Image 1 (cartoon, rainbow, N blue to C red):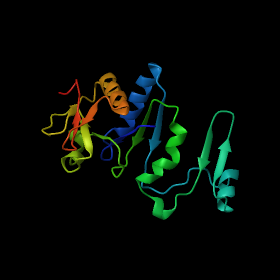
Image 2: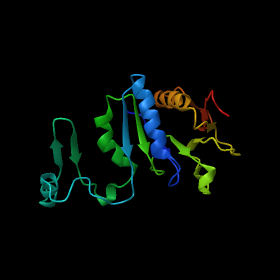
Image 3: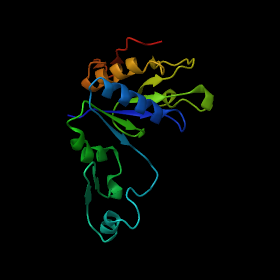
Image 4: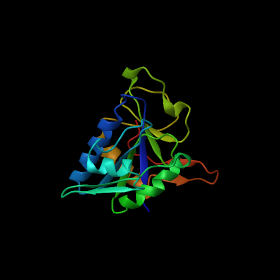
Length: 185
């Protein structure tokens, strides 16, 4: 089963930069990492006027595109399906990977880490959202949730791998989750 871990945070908190650093680090170590970008914005994935776009516009239920170096599938999401259940549609394509990092999606029923920077002057999502299991920051912060150092990419990558395999969390009898982190500040 593919384990997805969501990296969440407010705009300009550094989610994309953190994910790219973690993916680069894990790839250098020989791990295979998949990523998914979750967005609430509506935008086209293929280019207007190109053949795949024309196929979709003509009414094709699903459109695939294959080239010598990449492949993709464009499948519309039915309005009533817009929920965390949509991951079930694409995660099977990630089954051969060690870890899948999802950028965004606070509504997902999956582990979430929040990236936070004091310089943004924004509220902390974890303060009101118990589904966020840890906060990634190098700024001073008073919070009950565990804090992970933003500058320790190697430590964060190892934590994510342990989280993906279930080695970083254990469910207690009262149904709460206990996080086991060595590098808590």
